[in-house]
Image 1 (cartoon, rainbow, N blue to C red):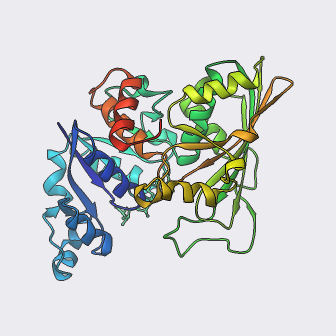
Image 2 (image 1 turned 120 degrees about the horizontal axis):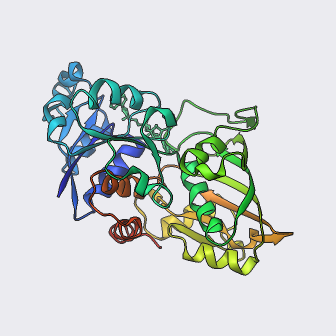
Length: 340
Ligand code: NAD
């Protein structure tokens, strides 16, 4: 049983903690918070040991009457690995200033750059490359979704060129600071967007073969991708079959009423998922088509949760707990109750 410290118990951190707690080969030894808010109080209620991420702020938790065990400095050396859930750029700083100092392995998240870690993780593509490594970046929600679908396609044909338009949610549901609320923003306005190179950090053989552009729209629930993938030759049935065989991708049908991201989230709520998380990528079955060897499809990404099972697999790879990525994927999926 390995011990995991979650440093930064926010949108990603709290989900990772709950996912670790569901595995039989790892446990949460503590979570950290920067401030004594409701999430800190709930972490304690759930049974997690709470530590101050910033040692000088420990007194704030005591003053707020939230039980606190100590600071990150008191727990970090007991951890076999840290999963960093801190905001963009802070993960990178934590590697340099905290994790390396204490000689502890760490996973940083997709807000960081590829060069800030030894490699970029996806359970299907780079599990073996990350095996036994010390500092790994778990790529973003969009990159994770694209890597899964491109894995399905790559399993049946050669990819000559992938073109992807990403329609991004403006803010997470709990976010009251970002927008827009009345506009569509090309972001970045330059093409390609950073998403293509990010996919290449996981799948080097797609270098020069993937082009992405991205826009932000006023929605909070999910991202959506429209993919156009030129191949050396493939049938629609083969694509459907490959998607069926690829873990963590599900097909949804507009004809059954799942005709929007809102309905996908309703489906997830009906599944009884905690926080309505859909860790799987949802591809609209009706959108899948092949014309002149080019595959077309549309998929939706639940930004807050698709990377969570990958964090669990990444822990197993970095701590050399399971050599076979498919076995780790299956174990994680079973423990989390994923559809496939
Ligand atoms: P968040 O703002 O919801 O949570 C971040 C948490 O880290 C907060 O609790 C904050 O108090 C804490 N924190 C701040 N400074 C810290 C420090 N110095 N040390 C430790 N903790 C600190 O952010 P998030 O959405 O969970 O994003 C975390 C990372 O995950 C980012 O790299 C982000 O790009 C990536 N990510 C986010 C999403 C998403 O949709 N939210 C999806 C995939 C990846």
